Length: 408
Ligand SMILES: Cc1cc2nc3c(=O)[nH]c(=O)nc-3n(C[C@H](O)[C@H](O)[C@H](O)COP(=O)(O)OP(=O)(O)OC[C@H]3O[C@@H](n4cnc5c(N)ncnc54)[C@H](O)[C@@H]3O)c2cc1C
Image 1 (tube, helix red, strand yellow):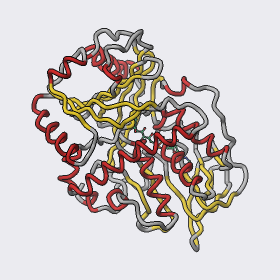
Image 2 (cartoon, rainbow, N blue to C red):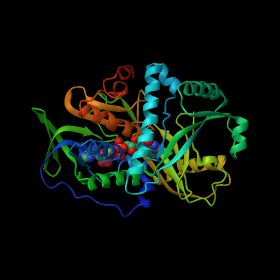
Image 3 (cartoon, helix red, strand yellow):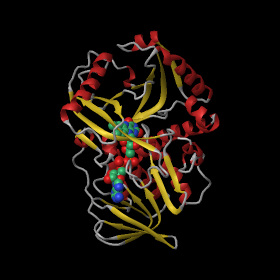
Image 4 (cartoon, protein in one colour):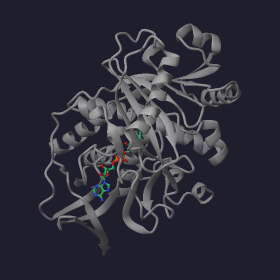
């Protein structure tokens, strides 16, 4: 499956990264991670710090999959609002899940600060606006629920929005404690840091078979080498073909994103907030360190990203117009644009945890707009499972055999 078509922005920000050789020997490790994207790398770093011997195997390049198409917003609020999630799984669990996502944003912040290179991690607040007047009541309800559970959130009226921004919206929530990152730099730097600490990382190394006997897992690569491991983690993004319909109830859609040339001034953009909305699929925007605007959205129910340049450019024109309609003064043109596959779980929760029928096998599949936050959450959950510690507070909520999946 192709992950994306078009011209990606993030890989252009960092050409001088390490390349890792393919696996050319047999190995024995405690943990083998399949996939070198956001999920695999964060898991690897977390397990390495917990003292485990780990190898990461990537079919193509580290950070080359969905991770390089990612727009780098790190938000604790999910595609499903807290009060709606409460209706789905109960308020207590919904609050526990949102709190864990907030903690995961903080853990990402800490991880970024410990890395040896700058990864453009910046604390930012999010601006979540009501797309229509009908959504105002929903936003008010969400505000009350977030406030009641100690989330740092403000409610902005239409008047306040007009005072702070060059556009008008019926209402908005301003959520504090979020952040943005350059996802490509982040993941490559995490992988480099793992290697610096003695971990083995192999690129151009595809795992083609997985068998187990007497508690030992044996992976075979396309080049015929084997990796024996006590634990295997699947961090393979949106490609778990053999699991879909069994353990994974997900829809693979396609999404679009664009990045403008640097704008001479972003003064009109209050707090450089990360902007998104209540409508589904939603439009979202952020800025970059060098003053570009990243805009994304227009999701469509098609599994393959859009390869046709003309058809894709029509969607990108719409994204560009959305920027102009909110910030007419920010008129630098789009320089990079792409269409990418985007996986969403049917109950709006990620797939994290053990294979219910195969000991020593784990999944780290962060489907949804908060994939990076889920990757961080997954790393902690899987570490605890491997080390036999008390289960993480939300492990039950995101596990692959959870009840909420039976109903979708
Ligand atoms: C347009 C777009 C915007 C997004 N924006 C955001 C955002 O703002 N914030 C956010 O948090 N998330 C966002 N996401 C989601 C985010 O990109 C994903 O959740 C995250 O990057 C997925 O990381 P991953 O490691 O799970 O998957 P991937 O990055 O796809 O990595 C999986 C890796 O596994 C490898 N692999 C697969 N099979 C094998 C095999 N058999 N052997 C070896 N290797 C294998 C693949 O080559 C791939 O590199 C966005 C996604 C898209 C498409």
